[in-house]
Image 1 (cartoon, helix red, strand yellow):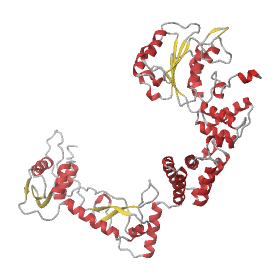
Image 2 (cartoon, rainbow, N blue to C red):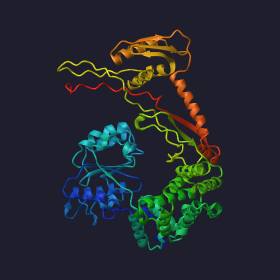
Image 3 (cartoon, rainbow, N blue to C red):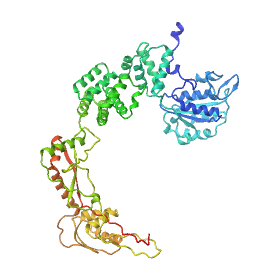
Length: 607
């Protein structure tokens, strides 16, 4: 009895640390690869293990050190059959073998530490077949240390093996990675981890509840060490048993069933019941931010089940999560779930910054409850359109442009209404109706000019020359500058010049106030290059009258904005959503659209 009291307690993570590959859990792919390599005697001299904390990187390194240095009465031989301890196994397991050197790169980062390794590799192992260097957290080494290790790592003596472990594989230089055999250790799946914990609890003779193990596995996030540490804590907290109630208290989690009740109340718009449940959970010791995180997690679960029904069979889920999550996934639409995720995600951030976390959490639930049953923007516009059609006479629909902007006269107006809705990721959609429509803004389309084309003469067996453009109007000229991507000329034509007269080879313009006079010569040179003929560009001596192209366009847009505010559908939207406003009106006018100049056709002989 005295010995039991004086013997230090060994935590579960160390007591049940795997000592061979048969007891290593969750890394079957790596074990298979190493098993084939040992069976074929194709054993690399350098290995690097990467993965999150607690998945077995250092444990794998020690098992490999045992496998390299296995020796029994039958002699020395590398093997993965380590069920029977060899001559060097016990010392390697306990970390005291002279030929297995473990180094923590976090505290030995410099070139001087690597020089010790470089100097020591010149000498063979003292007793074991191989000298094994295990460097943990290798990404912490300095650049000089990595460079100093390169040559030795590439061509080590035949009796030397290197094993590296890191959680930050991207910080390891590619020159190091290219010299090592890399193994990515995965997070341990929930069902495998649950079976592993059940096995350990059976060996310890400790009772448990399945819901408690599910919470521990979820909190462990695929890490065996984290899960075993939480299990150790749960055993101590529960006085020798592991129950769901003690684990909830230990982890600060709200009751999972109550969290689902809270979710149903919020999504059903029952604000009073939701706030009462939140306050009760808070009085029991649950953290408000943790409760919002649990709601977001359950929202993600329901959404995932809706998309992938098989997700409900996850071993880490409690029976309530499995059954009620499947039911909610069938009842709730996707837009409500995605909206709930956005509000909870934002509310979680606000709760973390708020002075009173409970108040911030309550405001988040109120916001979510009132937003849960809001219709989508397209449903709102459809409903409003129906009300307008039923109650108010509407003017004849505005004419719409045919495809590609060709044919037909008149103009159509496209507008976008910005309303203070709790939805961040959706915009009002187009409404199919015989009345004036709310549609997405369209940019002016370019149409091919119907004027005669100018074709450069082509000699027999000559390389075809670039097609030249024809300019028949001032709008053709703007379209040509647009097609040539000459921004300076285009802006000058639209904002600095006003056309007075236009004929083939001669243009007369009036310059606006502040216009650059040098653009006249630039325009003449561009026209000669683009059309292949000389153009005379004159500045009118008359005082400038009228408006430029841009000023006319802005005037039409202002008129369209004023007309949009008089549209019955827009009025209905503005009345339904106080504070909403029309933020953009786009005018589609085929006369204002600059036509595109098509290249001249090429002769059939040239083809």
